[in-house]
Length: 524
Image (cartoon, rainbow, N blue to C red):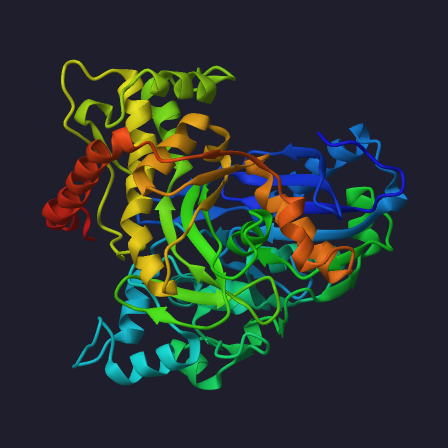
């Protein structure tokens, strides 16, 4: 925890992840003085559904905020802003008052996949899409709907076709960050970066995004159900009296337009200059950096989306489950249900240290919800490969760490080709970055120096707070790298190079050899 300075100004940062919200008080110079978390469940259905209660998002964030304010020495009058960052590619159907009329459809939900495939269909296809439709999507938005059904557009189409009562009652279909900012201000507004997964916006100019009527017709959704777009760093207004009372804040606190977690993390990683990269491993995993242009690699699921910085884009290279694999291992294999000790992750990390690089040949594929970038394969699933009678719990722990790293290595050369240069180093953030063992594994597998950022789990809230500080001119972009301290740098160990080169080759070979089997097993 940081020291509270009496003259400093602070931001209440709310970070809604898949596992629940985290709130923090962060100074406008990036120092985290207090944080709290709340856990939330996801409701999975046999038909590929994944839903959450949006009202509970808000209630959990309020509870966490109240706890922070009760135990923090930060004076209420020194809190100048609320800034929200959230998971995205979700859909929250709300009425005119912003109240949910149904559950939020999560990014893991695949029930709308068939509807996305249908709108892409054509007698002649290029990359699975009719060529005229493909040209429209690529020219205007720099991508197209995925076959996996994880896009917001797929969720909207699912509601329209299979939950028509909810779709008709919905005044707006919001991303989570926009649901929160409505709760805070009473205003419906959509941030630039969040609408990417709807595939209905003209994204060619990052300074001025607009909905495109042609893409909206192609998608088959209703424009009036979409919130108006506002640019990054927009100050939406002050807290409503209701929101201020619930949170325990003053009504003169300003609210900044929300951001997606990828966008805030890119700020919170400290890698804010063009082409400076970061790796995130939390529930999911990704590799990202800022770039000054817009580009697309349709064959490897790479594109750019508007950043939290006006006029800039970030490379979007999102993978599926990352740190969630470690949590899954804890809850489903290593410990009995609800019996894991409070320090289970620390125990698992210590076990992983006892196993040599390469896990004695054990490979883990982290595709619990399918494979994303650099492929779009929602049929493939996770596996432990090459188990023996000598395989121990410690082997499973290290193999999961290495498997997440192999997946990122699979992605790395495509991103570097995409941006036209090699990363000199990568900043490492997210829950996994708390582990020195995982940090060294990343350095060895990726063959890049890995900078372990201080308080890596707080990268989202730090980034959200720095976004607010930028909007309110408490900090400049050039000052941000110095506001994000590096705990240590892990250098690749050359003695492990041959081991990891060989294991990575087998990791890729396993996917290629078995993807047909997974398609047959999991095709609906």
